[in-house]
Image 1 (tube, helix red, strand yellow):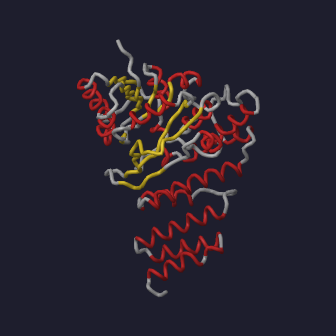
Image 2: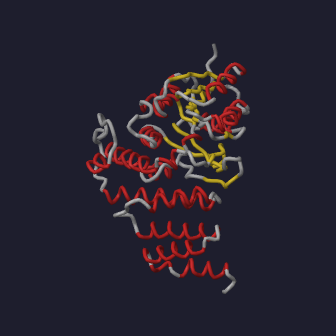
Length: 354
């Protein structure tokens, strides 16, 4: 039996809403030498039935129904079954560009030093409406330093060499919601990394994403991955070997102060809110902003919190909740008086008074 060139690996847990579109975007790829390994992580909706249909209709689809163990164990299970030279990640709510695998395999074949390759994404909403293009650094010399501050490879866009995945030992279960960041940092110690400038995936923005629901855990685990990578680069053993759970206490032992933890969380959370606002996702942006402002911030920069108050003010203004808008503006000014002129000028222009 001839092995496929690419093994596409996807974990599904109650993903029926967008599942058909995600699956068909892989089966309709212009690149055909693939197998599609799908781990059903104990879904209780119609995901299993949908997946079984595609497995019967297309021999490339291989579905494995498992008890619910979570994303990381499901991905390790799927990747362990991969027979391809390359492993491509895919999520059940996204849509792969038709030539995604063709572009990525061609690039990897031409650049044997690259262990992980991502690409640009087009954000879409729940209906498929475009929300804009988002890119990360493309070259290894830009990506590796950036990874010590933020994850600059979109997880569902990557194609990685199976040998790189095996060399690194796969995803580590303690890095909840940041398993990809940790894996890229470890692979980067032996391979180069890259991103394509081309859009390879439509990345769906909706309220149930991990990035919306678990930002604090994601920030903590990302900081831990970065601290461990720095320790390894300094010639030390991995400080997280044997650790069963990453907590703020564990981070403090790694030298990551509470101030650093809060500043990182505020920065990541604020970036996400700003991105949602810029994409016109007002409901999600407002919900996330109000959740952020309820958090007990001791060390976050006043600028970061003030900016979120300003976004809330603008969102309330769009809803014609003018009193709430002015109150939010006032809170922003109290946090950082220098911003006083900006929202007031904007409000006055809207009222055609300037």
